[in-house]
Length: 179
Image 1 (cartoon, one colour):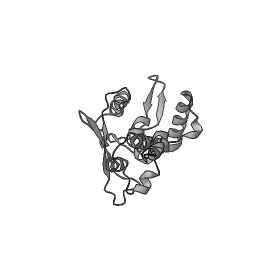
Image 2: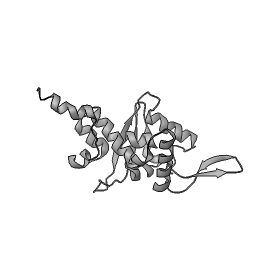
Image 3: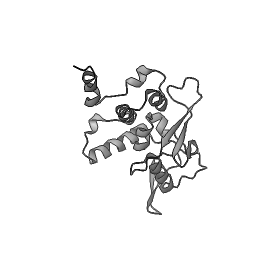
Image 4: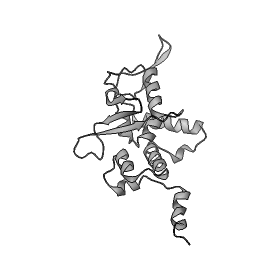
């Protein structure tokens, strides 16, 4: 969930409302249909493309592994991120056949995992996935038009509010003055 949110600059509401039927996998990428979004004033939805990266953190490969482990079939219309229930009979966890994972539970899980790896959980939230992905892309030099399209931003002002430039980017302004 975190990799997908980061790679797709996804808002929590977009991420948690992804259904299996919204996903399509290809050799070099996957697509996610986002039927509605905060910035989608016409309700026409959008298609997000996530590339395969051929790394251990490839978001496409991780989603495929998750879907297989969770036994979510390709023709399913279920939400992919749902609550887990423990089944005593089979001694295993299973996804509930219910609505999407709640914001509160997703936040609890994220903060718990951040603390396990030694990060200050007070500095993060679910919106950090969108902001972090946007910041990483901007600092890596992704062209503005593609950056804006990937994040589904309608204005530069909205897009720019998500990016936190690193010190190299910030000092590049003075360096380029030729002083």
